Image 1 (cartoon, rainbow, N blue to C red):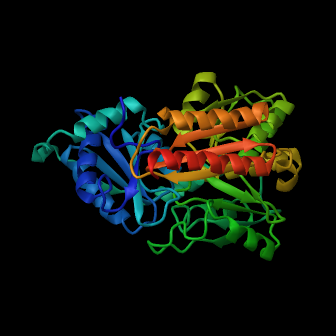
Image 2 (cartoon, rainbow, N blue to C red):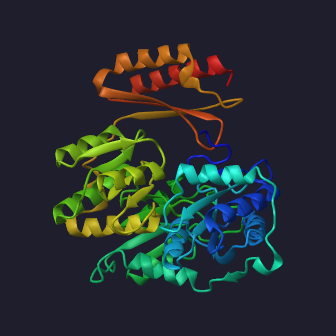
Length: 446
């Protein structure tokens, strides 16, 4: 069944518009409480990033969950993976994060975790959607949920992150620039790396409710690159607004994306004899990573875009490592979801084991030119079913042959089709991507 409200990673949209309005979020909290809490209610953890609208939606979720008879534990600003971890440790029935990840402040969204710290399966999301469409009925007054705040949530998560690398490992020989995107890692990440011994310089650590992801963070790493060069730092680490993805910058100011970071971790795990199963990427993973892994005899598999699908494939094949070029990296031998801080620490541990700089280790992944064009639609439509678009795709694939790929992928959170072309020759890739995007526009009136 097609989901009505949930996208690839929870529910997301513009604040005040349908699905991201206070009245809807009250109903969402009630429905989630009914489905996830069960008859006994249980407790649900709520964390958020630093958007101004987070206060409003935190209150709305509380109202709905309490009305369903569910107890609540408030975490305050907390990275998405931190909520997943604390959900497990507090034996909660679910965790909820109020965040729109790397989007600007006037967007927001709701992400859910199961009791195991995993993203909810499609079947549970469909159950919640079905409950949303029913009348809200409040439990008896004696059964209403209660709300408490967990005061030491940040400290608990900091210690968990530090424990993801060997206790004997120190970062005292590193100068690192940390970019927290004015988001949920602002009061977490600097302390993690400082307490492990690194000399830390920070940017993006002054959230005001409106500046999250604004010209900083993993989607805009230029500010980090400039600061790394100015500080003559060994490297830089940029997180997104909710801390579940990262980008890194080497000492020369060059951005190192998720594909190269996955390779570095995989190679170190392989050398240590602890790499299990295939490395899992997505349809967007650069062909360069697949070929680099092949050179060291590491199997690689692709799945559809979204970290939940990466996790499903890892579990299916008993794998421990996967991720996306955007910096969503899952180290399943360390935690249950994509975690920017944990992944960054695994890269630093891998560099130590390999005896390599970030620049040298990342150089093993030769990126194929890849062009991504976003075509915004007036309405959601299955463009892949249109004969003219199918013909344009076949033409591009025929020209590329075996030395390239074509992908048309609808966004799970907005009316956008992402047109991606990858190949050996930059000019050819650019031309084909633009031709495909124009084909989509002409057919759907974008």
